[in-house]
Amino acid sequence: MENKDKALSKVVNNLPVGELPSNFTFQMMNKIQAEVQKEKARAEKLGYILLVATSIGLIAIMVFVLTYFYAFNPWESLRNIEFNAQNESSFCFYISIATAALALLGLDYWLRRYREKHLK
Image 1 (cartoon, rainbow, N blue to C red):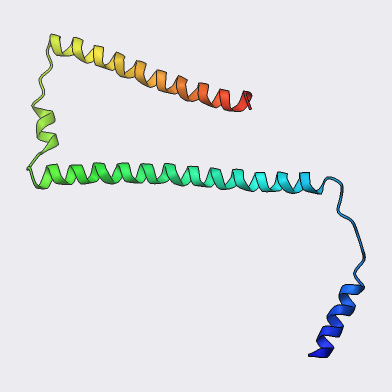
Image 2: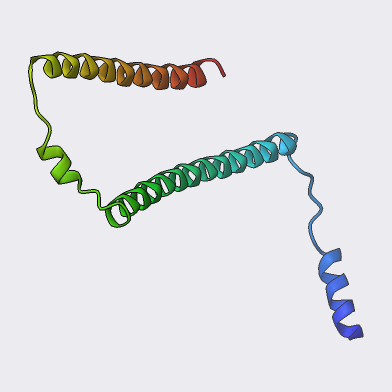
């Protein structure tokens, strides 16, 4: 045991004495911040994956309940839809509203990304 202690102290004493670079703290903080950003990105991706999986699961449960407990047949309901002039004008109105909503959501997403990139 004593031989090991002597060997270790001999090795430690023979290590070259060196100083840390002057910007060591800055470099270390940059590495730490990069790791924090990676972890944040991983957590965000995991959150999106969980959100999508939960949404798909809830939709599947809804279809299951409607189909098996309430004997709802969506194909039969779709066959019974009748189109007339009044329905077509309403349909065009709803399509235009849906298109505008999707365009505004896309614009909001793009502007938020732009602000994140250019205002940091």
